[in-house]
Length: 175
Figure 1 (tube, rainbow, N blue to C red):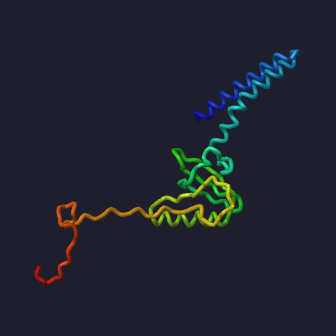
Figure 2: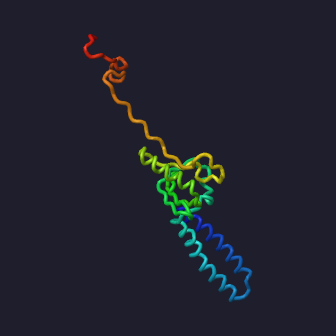
Figure 3: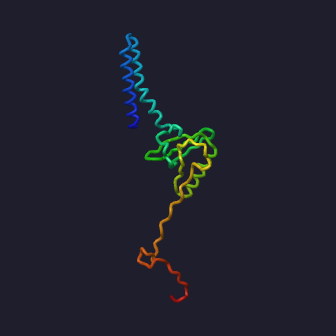
């Protein structure tokens, strides 16, 4: 929201400069009144237009700031058949809502990655989310592998004062 305020301030200043220059060259009182009326209508419109976009899904083709992102976490996904794939992606600090054009193979990849991530107890990921490429040899969606379990502490391990391994002792054999 802070960046929206800065953008609005910039638009308002530019708009004010345009209005002042138009008022300077306008000789008719009616023209000046119309210019001031349009300025009064334009300020709320300049603020409201971007504010309505904040909660809507943004097409991935319009993401210019995140074009360098190599991978992103898929927090949620909604598939609307023959329309779009809606994704909530987390790639830096805040999640963003994006819309991908409908692709059956990509939807299947996403569903498989979600199932595998649920089995592994991890998150589904998306590789190169904002790349505009037709190369689909490598899947865009994948699940992170299951995290490695911590090592079990053994009594004979070097960290616990033992010699450094477990020695097998056959039952009934003298040691």
